[in-house]
Image (tube, rainbow, N blue to C red):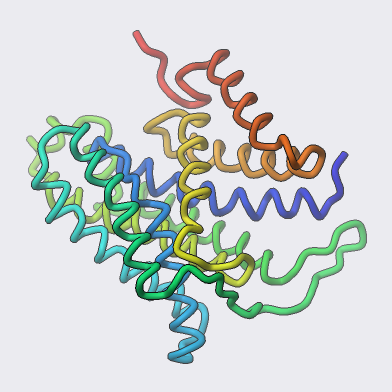
Length: 283
C-alpha cells in the first residue's frame, strides 16, 4: 500500500485530468472534434493567474475566474475564425495541432522558456493523524468538486444545459425544436476552454510554469477520455480519477518505468473493453 501522501498526490493529479477531460468531451459532444489546443489553454491559464496575482495584485480566486473568461473568449475566436472556416474533421484536427506550436511559440516569445513559480497561496498543512494534506492541494480538490457540481447543475437543470444534452444526443431533432446549434457550439467551446484554463490556474502554485506545461495534462486528459469512453462525460470524470491515481502510484514504485507501465495498463483496458468504461459498444 503506497503512503497516504502518494494517494493525495494522485487525487490532486486526478482533479486536473478530469477537469481537462470533461472540457474536451463537452466540446466533442457538440462539435464532433477533439480540441488539441486544450493543453496550451491550460498553460495560458497558468500564466494569466501568475501575472494577475504577482504583477497586478489581483486575488488568486479572481485570477482563476479571469483566466477562465479570457480563455473562453480565445476558444470562441478559435471556433469562429479557424474551426468554422475549415471543412473536414481531419483538416480541423491538423489546424488545431498547428495551434499547439503557434501558442507555445507565442508564449515562449512573450514569457521566455524559463520556469516560473507562483508562491503558495494557502500555506500550511492539515494533519488528520494518518495523513497530512496541504491546504493548497485541498483547495485544488475542493475547487474541482465545485466545478464538477456546477457543471452537473448546468447540464441537468438549466435551459442551456438541457439544450447541450439534446444536441449531443439527437442534433437533428434538437434543431427541429428551434435549438441553435451554432450558438450552442460557441457556448460549449467557451466552457470547454474555460475549464482547461482554470485547471491550469488552480494548479499554478503547485508546479513550475513554462510554455510547455500543457503537453502532459493534454495527453493524460486524452487518455482519460479513452479509458472512460469517447463522448461520455461520466467517463471523463472516472477516467481522470483512474489515471491520476495510477500515474501517482506507479511512479512511486517504479518511477523510471512509470509511463511504460501506465500506457501498458491502458492498452490492456482497451483490449478488454475497446469502447471504454462508459462508451457505447459498436454495433
